[in-house]
Length: 343
Image (cartoon, rainbow, N blue to C red; front, side):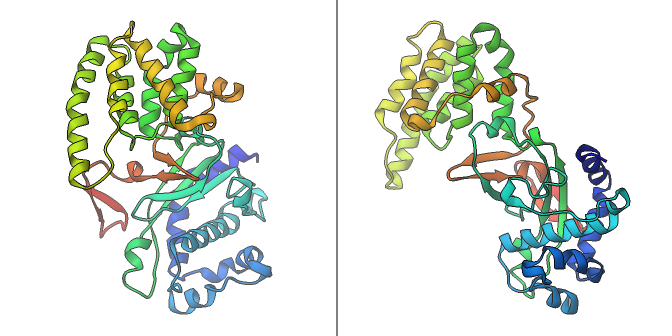
């Protein structure tokens, strides 16, 4: 079987895989995985946490990253011994350094806890829109809760399978998809500049946030003008709040840049000019236009991101949108053991 076919096997059996993974995380049937754990362990030895998990059904006092690595190792062990061996797959390697956790399947594994976040290596800002080149399984653990009441017991409380293009920023993809066809028909240079801004934008920056709001209304000039007028009220309110908190105020020049848009006709050209200036001022040489490969993909990508993504030295993935809705309270169902939302 080829890699896409093997991934489909995993996807179709994911509910049962998670059920068995939780048994192993509780120390049950752990001995069945000894050959795999020995092979994957350092120096060809069983991992240091194995004996404690086997005897007391608990883990040593470990951090979230270590728990994520353990979940990944046990997941691979279950795949190899109980699901893929019937297809002649008897040895699955784990190698996150290659950019994908399970290269034999071109499949990633991410294990956020109740804060819904993980950090990953940063390669290109355009991943925010294009996503990854491989699929990933998202395993939500209860580590944040479990660590408060030692000894440590961990379980998977929810899960999701994401295709590569879905591992992108949901809101930014929606914004890019909204205007893509119109932009490509009007001016491809404008389109590239706008996609660059969306990829690099930092919405904690007041000016950038205002530009995102204007960009959302790019094809509605009357609404752009109304939003420009409204920005003055927000500028004053935000600066009052900053003064009260003894923080640095938003520069007057940022406000003037928003006002200047109203003097440019057509208005959408004013927005394009302003976002281009923002990238140049804040990102310098780092804020490059998409290369030929990225641009070709951006023109045809489904732009169907499902998570939140922000970047610094690494990507910070936020999977909250997969498992809850804004304003919902997360509770664990006594029947299923999975997270459910309560509005």
